[in-house]
Length: 263
Image (tube, rainbow, N blue to C red; front, side, top):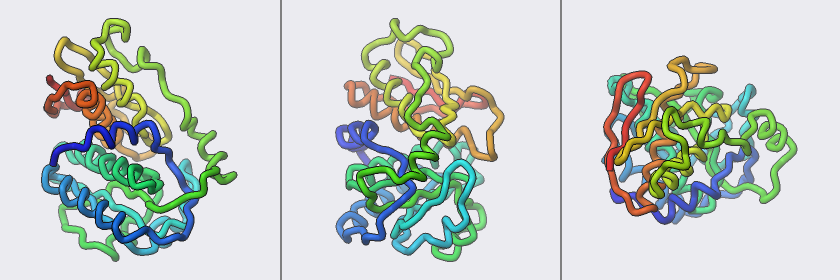
């Protein structure tokens, strides 16, 4: 699959997490396109897969509280499933899942990464899960009102979703004024990646022809994988680099480092 750089890069700046959905059904053409993207991503990212579930996800999100608030009204959802035998399963699932979410954004569908407050057993009743697999995250998909609901405004304030760390606070070594243009574009896209409770656990080290992604600390918070968050940031970073004309490849690393993008 060739990443649709222009569409997905622009979607980075449009995507917002939403929790209150309209009950309107998703058009067939949009579902087919989303399923097509899932199939393509599943074929190139071994160790993770995404499945569109065109069923009412009420039971999946039933009783969600905590930092996410409740998910209401969505007519469908996407499950992000990882092969737990793969040592890089979390990063791969985050990368793949964000691709699906950016495609949904292009299709004018709202989404919300949900990592810890859903019922995996309810998902397993609707799709087949192999013994070595685990449902690592899900997202509702559907349409929303243009204005945010009171609960969405409340939850957004609680997790400071509109706030992002300054790039200088995310760089481990080199100050941002010394970055090359393509690196600035790539890192700004990565900086805007969504993460659980907006914790932004990624840190970046920059070389002449590369950018390394590392964890702020190895300890997960609230039982949610920081490496999955970093996988989301990896896709944003790659899209930013490619948008700036630089193609590269990823090499996975060992803890506390995650991966390095080399030109």
